[in-house]
Image 1 (cartoon, rainbow, N blue to C red):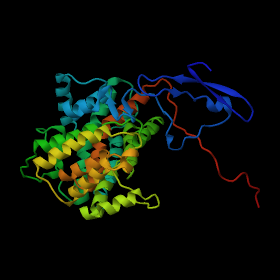
Image 2: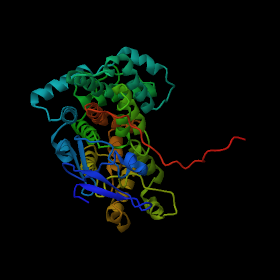
Image 3: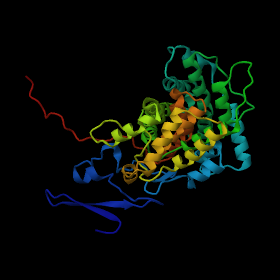
Image 4: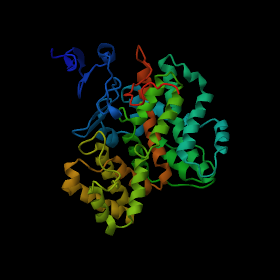
Length: 425
């Protein structure tokens, strides 16, 4: 066996097969098994894709063992603490951080493109009262594909820039509209005098002819959450976007699919589940009882917001949000039973051998839910907030796939366990 290949031996017949090893610029190498079926007549089996690299990418890097996350080579702590969400969006979409002039132009374009076609509002009128904002948002994004059908065929970098900037700018407006419609509240249009994140909070909270003050600490907290959610390698929703992209579907249809995948309570809905669980626990006196249940392997109860599929150490995004949560609670003088419950659970999890030995540290969902609640964001909007942050990453991933010379439609195979051919009766 050479150092750049892996040999697979079939013990049934003694046949051996060699497969090339592809080295990453950083992180684990991969075994190229693209010809595995052709050479061996077998498929590989990897339930949940836990050991499978589905693509090549130069957008986001994660080291789950050390708790590291980078966008285009920039550490997440630098992006969250020193840059804004629009810096991050520009970086993901264009490959480099913007100059001040580029950032100014990008910010201005985001403002101008933030308005949505009035026809989309008619679509919202068709939804029943109390429809979930994620369902409305997904439909709204799909509707954009009918308004900007030319984006189905993108051949130049300028066309990509127009498409990507348009959807990043309009998502917060659609998100805010989705919430207002679900509550029967009057629609608030974007304010061109406000920044990207401030504008979203404004559209969520304001009423016609009413002056509204938004505190800098609130805007910064939400902007950081957007930044921390901007991309996260090949997660479920990003994979959904890439799978649709491989079919040559409209990019906004791909984003709508990503929204659907993100809605799941095991993905983008996890921080909402955290808050609902804290509400269920109810008081500090009951924390020990639920901790004991979490440790009992025969009890189906699981603590939400702890541990991560990729991070076996502390989630670096959670580290950043913990500091923001503490600052936010102090500056806004926020207290309450949920925070007391969360603090006790957090203290136990960070010091109890059961959690520490299993790497069950608080993750981003544990902290983001508490922060969003402090920002007066309703629980049903938590996943929507995730969508706003993740859209630049989805679009960057969509474009990266489109740049491949030979695009293959995503088509996994299966291990069939059904009946063999039956004789008709």
